[in-house]
Amino acid sequence: METQTNNLKKFYFHAEGVYVYAYDEDYAKEVFAQEFGDSNSDCEDEGELSYQTIDDFDSKYTLVAKNDSNEEDCMSYFYDKWDDWDLVIAREQSHPGTVWSDFDSGEKVCGIYQINVIGYFITTTPGEKDETYGHYNGHLC
Image (cartoon, rainbow, N blue to C red; front, side):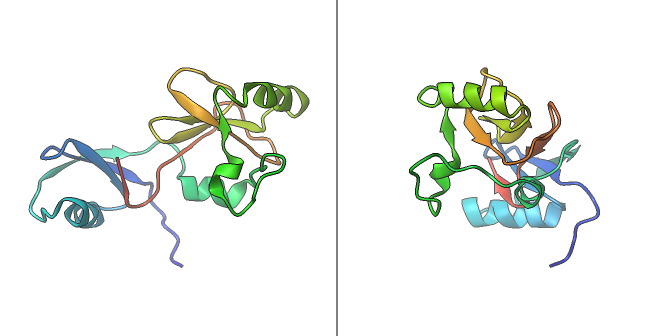
């Protein structure tokens, strides 16, 4: 697998009002065309992201599954903002830096936040406060 040396970029497609995250414009257009069937749509390069990708997060951290969860199910690692609040707070108090807020915009940020957050992930090792990861090559949103 080839390692990328540049950062992921954010491309805005005006025709549908969506973003595609990719390392280059050609791939962003390919992803857009697959989703919307329009291979001629113009896009605007909004520049490189200032944080690492979700793939980088996944290679650096190991997630903690909920008790009595099926570890094969990816939702076993997601802690709901409302239903699992007491678990999240207890974990942050006992193991600082291991709770990651999952923002509705697609970023994971180390620390407990509540606004624009859909839930939380917990890792076995701590991150740095406000350490941020988000999106992946070909992510459409």
